[in-house]
Amino acid sequence: MARYRVFLNGRNLRIDFDGCVQLAGFWVNCCVEAATDSEAGEQAIQLAETHDVFGQLHNGPDDASPIILVTEIERLPWYDRHPLGRQGFTFYLNPDGDLDEIPLA
Image (cartoon, rainbow, N blue to C red; front, side):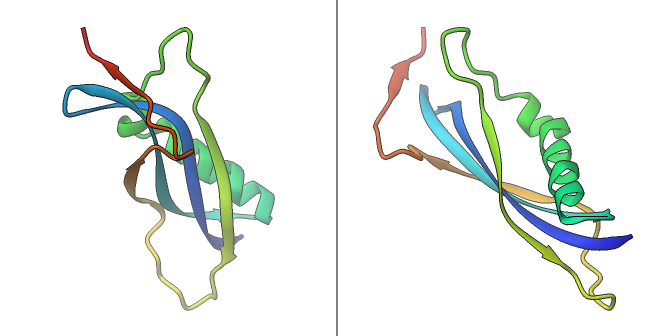
């Protein structure tokens, strides 16, 4: 098995920022061991989806579901010792450039 670094982009999330629910997204790096590039991407998405941070993000019943996209997959050389797992989430607001605020009740 090879080691891979997979960069993911989460989109279409509604997150509470300072009292308003806003459209947001995130970036996260994941390092996994896999047999192929596609398997590495699938494992990275599973890591992101099972993280406590992602589990706390819930869209309402009328909202579109969150999307996680693989943006980059890099096969790491044998000597690279990136730790396996997630490297942390970085969130950003308004991934589509539209201000979409909903005041909290």
